[in-house]
Image (cartoon, rainbow, N blue to C red; front, side):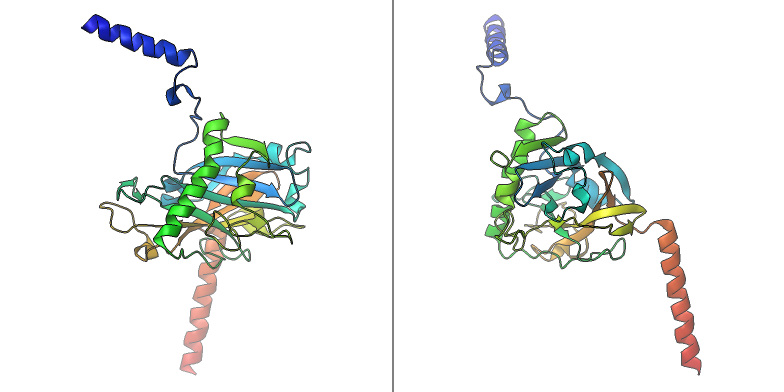
Amino acid sequence: MQLKNSFKLLSLAALAMSGLGVSSAIAQNTTYAPGDIVLFFQQFGGSNTVMLNVGAGITFRDTSVNLINIANINAELSSGALGFGATWYDTSSVWWGAAGVRSSNAAINTHVGGDPNRTIYISQGRSALGVEGSASSPGWLVDSNGSMTTGSSNIIQMANRMETTSLTDRLVETTGTSNVDGQNPFNILGNPNTAFGIFPGGVEASFGAGQLGSFGGVAAEGSLDLYRILASTTATGQVEIGDDSDLRNGTYEGSFVISQAGDVSFIVVPEPTSAMLLGMTALLGGCVRRRKATI
């Protein structure tokens, strides 16, 4: 019996190695895992898209320090043939966003690393540079449980290209093949339309002439606020932060920024000098208020 079982295992292994096996024989990207956040870039009227895997969503949920220079994507963005040109950071028709989700399964109320099924990590463009550690965008409120399933499924569909096609943390594809443009369409004016089937106005921000300014010590060319949206609040042991108890109401986790050199960072707190200045401003403001009160 043992000999027969050993022969069977050897036969299955040979079948997989021959390329005739099923899913186990299909090459998978070992640098990608469900729940990772993917940054994506596209251009209105362009023919290519770029994706970059920056790591697990829970990393950005849990960090209390700025993550500087997570990865560099300049070579892919600046390529004239496959990217958007050497001055992509000054090109207003180039847009970028961020999305990640582990599972679209609505039936099983479980969690991994504190994130229940269909926990969506999604971006929204900052309307102004603002202050590090605070959102500068309205945030997201998903209207229904069904929409959470739809959004999760569509994010997975986009990320599936990263998982099954790339062998690294990045992927450059034509718009005819990529799912980036399909899940993040433009309207006829070149502005983002509904993203992933549930986010009206899109989840992307555009670049443009000039620099945004210093953000967390980074000379930022673009910035995205990252939100975490829960589809469930009843999974035992799940992590809840701030307003996570409000079902389908996104909580601000921090902001992605990108420099002219293509370095990507994640900012959650002000740099020390900024924090000191804010503290001094608050202290001076308090002194002024107290002095006025005694007059």
